[in-house]
Image (tube, rainbow over all chains, first blue to last red; front, side):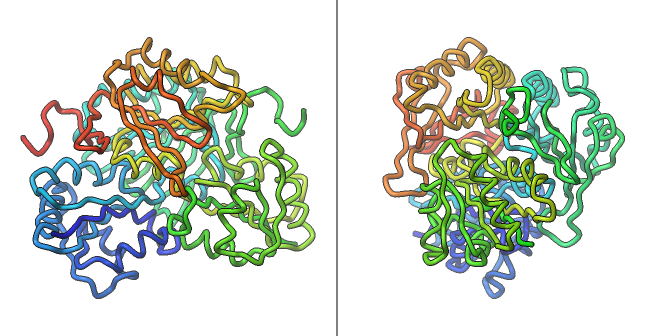
Length: 249
Length: 249
């Protein structure tokens, strides 16, 4: 009986993978995942057989990986970012009941909130939340409520899946909700595109400007809290909230 | 003129560091940080000189690192977890204005929400927030408001700094706020202690049980959303909210 190792690859470059992720890829008999993520794993294990399924066929993909493990293989199921943040580890655990005896292991990785944050500066140094704007599996009303509560609580926010071809205008809708729920128009915001990959680029501006900003599905969006500011070209959230910067006390 | 590389080491083991973090440690002339974190870096760069300051002296520590960089050194400022999540990257950027010409670079790492999540199963697969219970730099009222909003929005929650010698009983207070703001007593919860280090251990139970559970400063606490459940001994949050498990549709 084999096992499925759900591997978070980080944002894209091999240098941003953990040592355990690299070791898991090298140990695998089969690498399973969405085509784009399999490409990220290629430089580490170029000769390992692969099994890919299209973007929205996650259930088929997980069942296929578990079936190969049931047949004795060590299967690396690859995800970008972390295996557990909008990743496949939950679904593999959920479906593993259909394949008794198959072992499941999770190797964590750097999710886009962290890797994109490092590109922008230090936007998530204090309390933050991660919210996906994809309503494929979550009712939009629930997403709206999360956005409103995040604004009321003055969280820093990392927005995943801010847009797609089927969902143009979702980020603008989200910005409107944040503004209506207490975030100020001058709140410092940032966008990072193609984190850790060719064509990495970032943008910073205010929340009012973000409402008009075009983003695509390869972008992660960052909304500051009321103390977040630009220091030179970096977006930085202080650790504390005691009024004056802590080093001036 | 040298530079400061703020390095997120991940939870503890070398295997959970990224390749870029390992490379940064090896390239450094000096490793700077809190004593406990310097120990985590030792296996990678055993012969590199170190400069450590006590736990709460972060400003002194960052200034010392920047001063050494201004004198020409490549300084690795090490943090556990990610450099940008309750880490030192923000403070280094904030203080770097006092040391013109010193370059600052951030190498991200796996924060405890992700590494602890992988130990428990897949607790943060859907929208989540990270909240620190430390009121050393944040007014308790602000922490209370964040907890209440996180419960109202049905976020999964990762709680950092749930307790310390000076703050016994903070986790119980936080649990009371969550219960008063919409989280149900049977919400699935977990605690991971010494993630990725010797003595790693975890606990799972309900939110009602968590209220009575003792935790220390080496623990990270996880609160599920309304759909989080135990699958065998794993804490798993489904990706979607459409009622039935998605693979039964």
